[in-house]
Length: 556
Image (tube, rainbow, N blue to C red; front, side, top):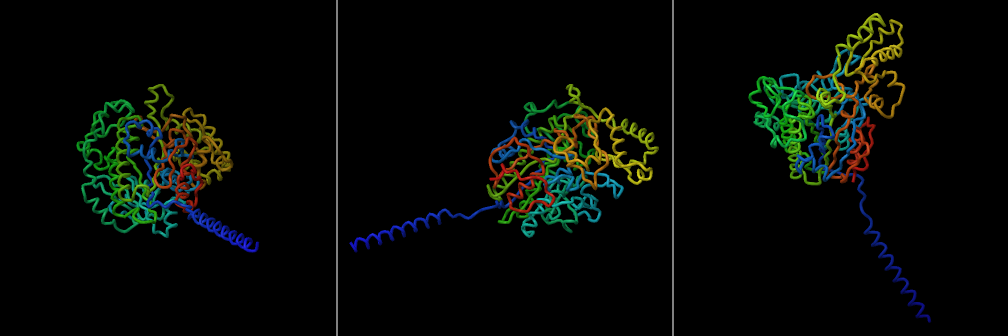
């Protein structure tokens, strides 16, 4: 009995030991390191200037497998993506994508605007404190000093103790300066004219790197001095209008609007290398230079995340000149699709497939040419600015005895002279409302809002919400005018943008690469959501003025 009890005790101890060992082994196997961020070697931010969302769907059948289709097929498509502010233009667009907020906070309220403190018109990226690098002209006298908040690129630099590189590239200076942020290693843009060189500002460096000098000295840009012909036979371009029409601009020296466009023959009459901006080749030049930067700067070559910001500007130049329904715009997007595939293939080779993250969006959309819409019996037209100015001038004289109560009209906003109103003992709020009521009586204006309304109310939807997000208390005007849908202040050919209407706000947003789920959403997303989404992916702090929210569906 004594031995039996002892045997039982020993067997129990063995069983417990085995159980404990198995439990420890199981626990050891289940414990895995917790990953709270993704660390792609490189983030590539792509802004396609003036890209409407329906360019993605309209030309879908003409795209290859390696560009837009690859992004959608391997990544995430936000189908209902919008700007939540106006004016919808290039400077505010690039600033909003990268700061994660709107002009109300980041302060870039237009490409140009009236500065009511300096009493002059200012440009969003101009800065006379710096000099041009790579040019003898003033084209390089730029900096991001008018952008009041940080960008996702700034936050990456801060997060990595400036070990992560940021390089920004665009034909337009503002398309490089604003995405690069305040701490970029470099921002480069294109100087046309007789040189056709890539330049920068002394804000970033004192001399161009050797690789940029080598690129400028090569024939990398000159090879595009050739006729602009269609990528594919023009008879299969069924997704755009007639090639010969009255809705497109004509280059100096051309007799009609049709393909091919003889660029060598039109060269001198159209400002030489500036001519390439208005062609699909401008995007290819940008892709060439971006890939040269990738190679020379060793972007994505180590474990510390770098950032390459690319803005394709020629889509905007072509849209403005030829319109959103032209054969030229279709060919531009088909060629851009090839350039995107070329970039992604190079990233696969140099950085490694699955080791980088890309997002693609636009800085604004665009309207169909109103003269075309009118011919198709759609309500549309052009603002008679001279007539409205004459009527408004007469109103000011009658009501206030002087036109000096108005200092400037800029970006669809009226800036009042507060000192003169005070001297006339006229209440500012009353003056704003009186002028707004007068302007509302003008047939081509749809709505008018006052600065007082922007200050006192908190709008949550519709046109007032969009205007308020674009309204900066220190920089914006006293009265905001909104044209009727389909009406613009522009020439009779080509397309433009800037309004709070849906044709200007609805743009694509695609993500793909490391840390990105495969899928899509039709839920509304907004431009300021992009930077917080990338910040969440990387684990960096949000830009310091961010008002957007991470798009949770995107992140893996």
